Amino acid sequence: MIDYFFAQYKDYSTLMVSLELIAIFFGLSSVWFAKKDNILVFPTGLVSTSIYAYLLWQWELLGDSMINVYYFVMSVYGWYHWTRKKGDEVEFPISWTTRKDKGYSMVIFVATIIFVVLVYLYFGKFTTWYSYVDTLLTAIFFVGMWLMAKRKIENWIFWIIGDFISIPLYFAKGYTFTSLQYIIFTIIAFYGYLEWKKTLNSSPKQELQK
Image (cartoon, one colour):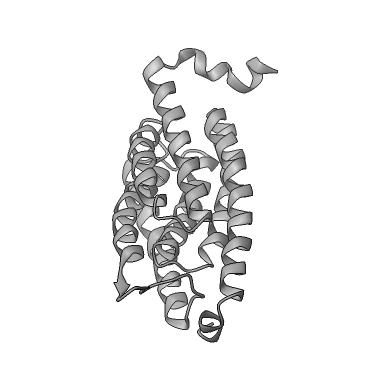
């Protein structure tokens, strides 16, 4: 059983395995802090995404590698966005998406798919089903990260869908540790949605903005 799940790591360098485990630790920490609506989601995320951007490029998952570069940039933006205040009040608390947000989300989704398809075609990487799934995941996660940076509760829906799809993808590719990470991500994302919704339901001001 152990050989079935982890045999692929016998050909990995100690450095690559160590980097994957470090990225997983900080990735899980980041998602946990996001669930708690804690600003530490961003510095921990920056560590994880920078490592994964490198690892995924080495694994030839170009879309996912670009996801993590994007995560890095959006983490910097989100860090700034979440800390903005009007006096003593947080300027951008947890909220529902507006019609405008949904429009932007659609644009980001479609534009991302087009961009990733062009990248895969340019590098001649549409050789397996992984590439097609990776293209869809990139679009899902781009929207999810943008909504999280904007502190919109619907970000969790995109994370749940994307994380769930990622479980078999990474397992099929042979990256068992990362696949296990996405199982945990899916669970945390589900409870993250419930926790953020509870926060919104207890805030009449936010409920009116829905």
